[in-house]
Structure formats: C-alpha cells, structure tokens
Length: 114
Length: 115
Image (cartoon, rainbow over the protein chains, first blue to last red):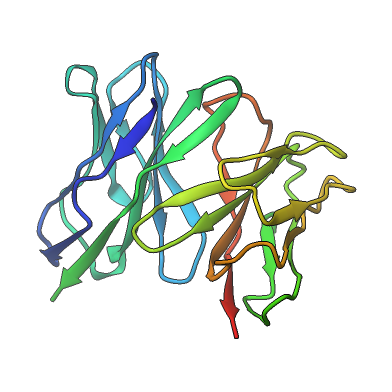
C-alpha cells in the first residue's frame, strides 16, 4: 500500500542553522512528490514538487529537496533557518490507485530557537 | 486575488446537530477536496469532486455529506452520525482531478468544536 512516513514528529533548530526534514515513501511506480508547509491555524502552502528530471528541486523560501529513488526518500533541506520558518511541514505523494489520491505524511513540526 | 475561502473560522456543534462548513474558490479549478486534520495524523480525505454535480467518497466519508451545485462552491456537512467531529477541516482545490501531479491549493481551514 502507498504510504508516506515522516520519522520526526518535531525538530528544534537554532536560527541560522541548517535544516533537514526526512520523508520516506512507499509507492510502486514513479512517485509524484510534494512538500507543503502549514503555519499555525492556517491552510497548507506548496513549497516544492518533484515529478521527473533533476532529482534536486528548488522551492520557495529557500527550500530544496532531493529525490533518492534507491532510498525511497525525498528529504527537505534549507541551509540557514529563519525564525519565520517555524511551522509544520508535510510530505506528500500523488498516487494513481484506482483513481488519483494524494497521500500525506503525519507532518513534522519545526521549532526555531533564537 | 484568487484563492480559497472557508467560513466560519471556528464552529461549535451541539450533540445531535448537523453543521455546514463553507468552501468557495475563485481559481476556476475543476476539482475540490475536503480533508480532516487531527494532531499527529496528517490529512485524511473526506470527499472530493471532479466536476459540478459529481463527488466521490474519500477515506473517511462516514458521517459527512457534500454537494457541488456550483463550480466555485463545495460545502461540507458534518452530520450527527459523525461521533467524533472535533478537528480542523481543510478545503482544497486543484485545476483538475485524476492526475497525481496536480498541486492542491488550500483554504485557511475551519476548526470544529463540540459543545
């Protein structure tokens, strides 16, 4: 069955430090992968997406993600975190399973300390 | 500005009561979705609609109902059959349904609480 796993429920990083959020997926075919961000009490906003081609994709707000097929991973990275990056981050896979479906991970909450 | 609006921001439900959450989009998108968000569980699909007058059940449709009479609107009714309705409800839309590469655009959400 298709699934998305975000192993870290929450992560705390210092402002200015680098960030990596992990995402592993289970999907038999070529995955369509997304990262969304949710600020408290708000809806989700797309950060970036991967369909094919270059496995390193750039997104908004200085984020990037790398698709590694051999590891079934799509980790999100940012070289220098800002306090405004504190939010919840969701990895998702677009799956064709008798109809289209987006499967979301449980999310990783990012805390940024001064 | 194009986008998705949801109302109300907070909604309180009494036992045995049906309540309706509003979702409107002016993005001219064909597809619309309702998700339920609970802490630590990510988003779960309740219903989705590909076109006007058509909608399909998602993973957790029991206790919910929807309609799609207009392209712009996709209201969700939480019925009294939904025994645990307290959650954050998110409406989303995408240009089309049926393509896994579609980006979904989300509204700001409605938080439903039971009195």
